Length: 244
Ligand SMILES: O=C(O)CCC(=O)C(=O)O
Image (cartoon, rainbow, N blue to C red; front, top):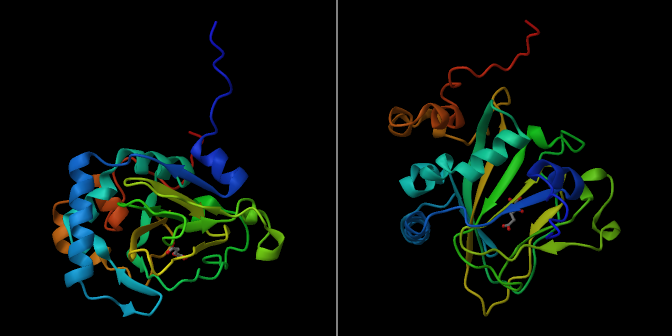
């Protein structure tokens, strides 16, 4: 008899235990190629909100190219969102951050610390990559178990992980997980990565988020995509719980 071994942890179990989970091969070859083209066009023609020495920031990328918007239909992504947040999931923000080859890493930090503790169903950041990211090419890093105590700093957490992304892979973590863009050597190219953040329907979307007002996207959206955009909860989803 073959030894089947232990069941792998579910996404939610991995997130609760280690503070993150990962996905591989999210996209078809065609979709991946269109995302790569869209990223190249964004960097060339897009208007960044800021362009600093270490990083360029493009918000609301789903409105820039449909290859980005179609990520919202991805079945593996949605499976993770239902598992972690629930069926009333909505999008909080979406952006591209281009890490620049400065020879340094960025600082460790946690997002949205008004939550104050590990509540992965309140805020999930999904970092999505369309290119390979090597160890010295600005990999996104996380600190496993840092989600357990937001009053501890990096000095208490020696076991950081640099996520060595492959085209079509993703790294997802919650607000209390410490993270950063890692070492980016001058010999490496700029590193674009997509950051899609999700919250429950009843949490206010980011003030700079505009997908909920983008009529072009809303008009052509499936019920699920309409919900993620923040336009309308899809039929059958209730935020309340009834016993009868
Ligand atoms: O660029 C990265 O890899 C990390 C981005 C980051 O720190 C953030 O989105 O808060």
